[in-house]
Structure formats: structure tokens, C-alpha cells
Length: 219
Ligand SMILES: C[S@@+](CC[C@H](N)C(=O)[O-])C[C@H]1O[C@@H](n2cnc3c(N)ncnc32)[C@H](O)[C@@H]1O
Image (tube, rainbow, N blue to C red; front, side, top):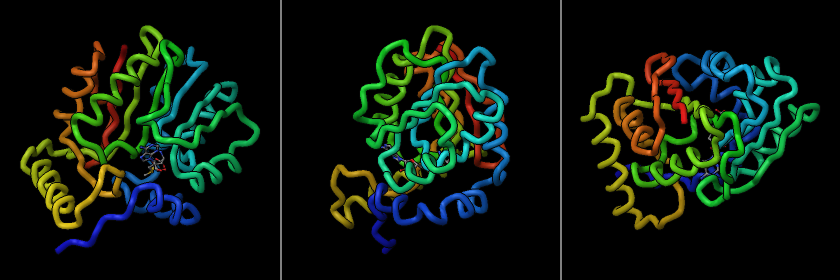
């Protein structure tokens, strides 16, 4: 039997001190996606929401390119946010220590929303609700850039295996509605169709190395 997955917030809080080094080592493409993301943020962007911002690895390239940008970051792991706040104190940043499933993101508020390596733990229905809120909080023609662990080969059998393993863990350990750190990456095709289903008019894969994939969706 597989080990019981750790509760998500605890997982990240207990690893906050070593997170940056480990993350760069562990993901396909290493630090490349963190440099790449700034290149796709529209030049007129003044307000940006970062969902699951963690320690803010993706914000370094963004603040370098857009030093005046106003960033709102949401993350429920307070220790991760502490690291972020220490790194970027000279920039305009508003941190919300809560779950992005419950925070009211508002309506027509942001020029851009980003999320890096945070959404591969959630089901289709959880993400549909989340992406509908992301769509609503964007201004007209605003962009949502998601970079995440996906199944780069688009093999839906692999996706099904991850999902059935998750179901088994839920049964074996009688897991509740809380969030657990267990990966359920979608195929790129599935993720893109979900973004279309959430209302986005244009959904494009803009970058990828193996299973680290970046998708840009326009409202
Ligand atoms: C792998 S880290 C990514 C952090 C950062 N974006 C990066 O790429 O380095 C995932 C982050 O998502 C956060 N997270 C996961 N589920 C969340 C939720 N429901 N609400 C807010 N934050 C969440 C975790 O606390 C963690 O900091």
C-alpha cells in the first residue's frame, strides 16, 4: 500500500526553508519556466494575481521586467509566504494567506493572472470552479498564464492511472475533503479543454519542456 499523502498546507510549510533549491532540481526544465513566464506577460500589465505564489520563484523575472507592477499573491502556506515577503520587500505586493478556492478574487480586477506548479493536485470539477473565478476576475482581454506539471505526451491512460491511484488512497486512508499533496496531472489536451469550458476565448500552449507546460488563455 502507498504511504498516506501529507496534508497540502503542512507539506509546504515544513519544506519552506529548502523549497527553492529542491523545486528547481525536481521539475522538468529546472529554473527555465521561471524565466520564461515574464516573457509572456503583456507589456501593458499593471495588476497581476499569482495563485499559489509560494516563495515567489516566478516573481523574480516578473519584477525585473515590470518593477512597477502591483502583485496580489494568494497561498495558504504561511511559511512559504514569509520567504516571499523577505525576498521582494521593495516591490508592490499584497499577500493573502488563504485558499484560492475560498478567496473572493473580485470581478474585472486584474490585467493578468498566473499560477505556477500549483494546480496539479485538483480534479476537473475543482479546477472548473477555480478557473471560472479566474475568468471573472480578469479584465476584458486579460490573460491567464498557467505553468504546471502536465502529461506532456498527452497519454490519457497515464492520467487515468494517477486518478485511480488517488481514488484508492482516498478509500484506503478514509481521506476527508481537506487538500492532500498528491499529484493528478492532466494531459495538456484535457487542461486546455477545461480552460475553454471555463469561458476563455483563446487557449494556447506557449512553452513546454517534458511535463512542465505553459498555457496562455485570453478572456
Ligand atoms: C509547488 S508550490 C509552487 C509555488 C510557486 N508558484 C513556485 O512555482 O515555486 C505550490 C504552492 O501552492 C500552494 N497551494 C496549494 N493549494 C493551495 C490552495 N488551495 N490555496 C492556496 N495555495 C495553495 C502551496 O501552499 C504551495 O505554496
